Image 1 (cartoon, one colour):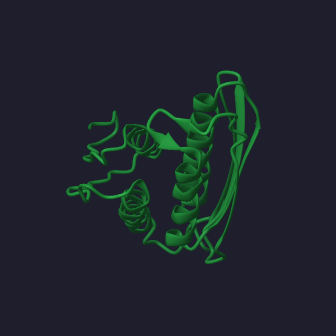
Image 2 (image 1 turned 180 degrees about the vertical axis):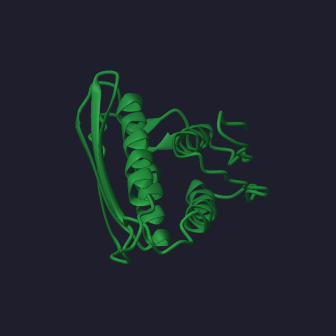
Image 3 (image 1 turned 90 degrees about the vertical axis):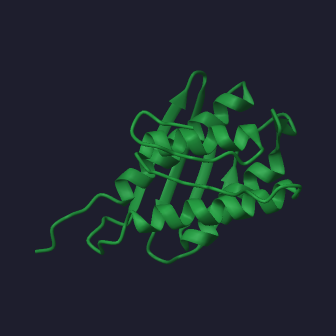
Amino acid sequence: MKTKNGITNFDTGIKYLDHIIMNFCEYTSLEVKINQVPKNKTSRSIISYTTELLSKAMSLSITNTSIVGFGYASIPSDESLAKVSLDLKNSQYCKVELGMKGCQIDDLQKEDLEYFFHLLSKNLKACLHITVEYGIYDKHKVDAVVKALAMAWRQATNRYEKK
């Protein structure tokens, strides 16, 4: 798959997970290459593998220690509004409130979606708070979350000059 900003290669076998990663990479200009996703595995093992590779790509993009280290975004997607707070200063914690009404979106179960965000937080050793304030459609709620996470990531990884 290709984003507007760069090349992102992956096919996890879970289409909605691919959609989430593609959008995140597009909004952050992050390049991710996932070459061999384990075949015939559970969705949890695929998510674990995928978040590990995504976290590595994210960590490589912040090798400079002069980053802000935290970010926040409140982003809409159609009728939904999501808020994400992110702290990259080695304080692992994750709270996810998606407010989903259904038990899955396309081919991704709600608990696997939450698992994705928890593992991402764990692998990054980051503090991550995700809250969907309101919305009608579950896809729009998650799209808002992904956009807000991307913007919080961009804020947190902004570089600043030490005085």
